[in-house]
Every structure is written in C-alpha cells, then in structure tokens.
Image 1 (cartoon, one colour):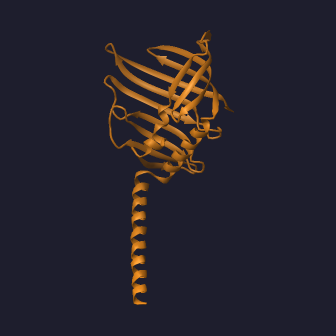
Image 2: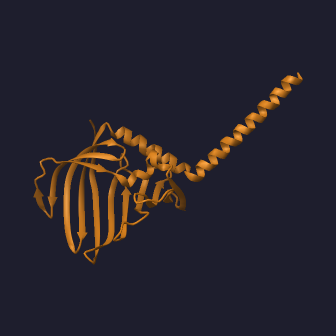
Image 3: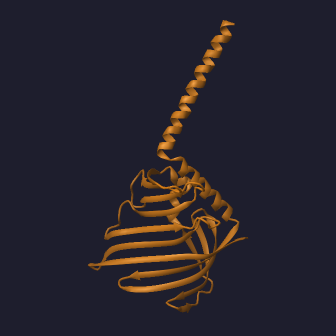
Length: 229
C-alpha cells in the first residue's frame, strides 16, 4: 500500500511538472506569436491550398504616377496559385491610357510578397505586437526578428471573428540606397469568398540623376470569379 501511494505521488509530481512546462511554453509562444495571428496564418494557408484547385479571374485597374507622368492601365487576367505566394497569371486583355495593347495571352509569374508575413514559414520570423483594437479588428505592429535588406516592417490588421486579413502596411526595415520612402498598403474585402486584395497602393520617394522623384501606384481589383479547374 505504501509503495502504491508513493507511486501515485510521483505520478502527480510528474503531471504537475508537465503541466507547468506546457503552460510555460504556451505563454512564450503566445508572447512571440499571438493566437489570433496563428489562427489567421492557418486560415490563410488552408485557403491557398484550396485555391490550388481553382482558377482566379479578375480585372485590375492601375494608376501609375511617376516623374509627373500618369499612366492608366486596365487588364483582365486569369490565373492560379502554384504556391501560397506564387500566382501564375495569363493576361487576357490590356488597355493602356484607353488604347488596347495586343498581349497574345502573355503569361506572368506574380510573387505575392505582401502576404508573406502570414505564411506558416514566416510567422515565427516576426514579432507581432498588438497596438490597437476595435469591436471587429485587431491591429498588430510587425517587426522582423532579424533586420536585413529583404526584411519588412509595418502593420497587419486581422478581423477578430473570421481571422481574415483586413489590411497590410509594409515598408523595408532597411531602405535601399537612394530611397527615402517605399511604402505599400494592401486592403482586403471581408465579404470576398477567398482572401484576395481589392485595393493596393504604393508610395515611393527616391533620388534619380540628382533629382528627387516621387512615385505612386494605385490598383483596384474587382470582378473576381473563382472557378474549379
């Protein structure tokens, strides 16, 4: 009987140690990667896995302002996801400043870097710090754990109920030589079937041939159609 009681005490101690270790590890994980971000990352990855079996059709209207010149481009395109951030697109038609440009269905590979923070492989490389909260949205400041020429900082906004991305603001942790500003903002429509951008804008300021150049690119994405392959 005494031996049995001793074994029970040992098991109780072991369970307590295990519980404390799990609790400690969970607290460290939640500090580095909030639960909302982990759930948003899983939702995003699951969606992109599903989208591999879909084609995505969209209309993209871009306004490009650089060095005092404005270009309006409108194109209809269809594509599919090869990887979570790699979109293979076929341009069906393209108009530049109202003039149809023959494209002969050119194929382009688009790397969607604006969503890399939320990819499963990248989440652990960044610190997500809550900075504001509304009834429906949590805003996180995002900082890379290691700064280099490819790392980005900024903000990501997540919808609390659905864990969908609402908005992403990104800029380089280290600006390239000659650049004073390079900032991208991406907006997502909450009612869209899958998480795809509906509006993006880029603002840049840099020195070229001794002169300061400002550039702005805005793009609207609409007429989305998701079709099974």
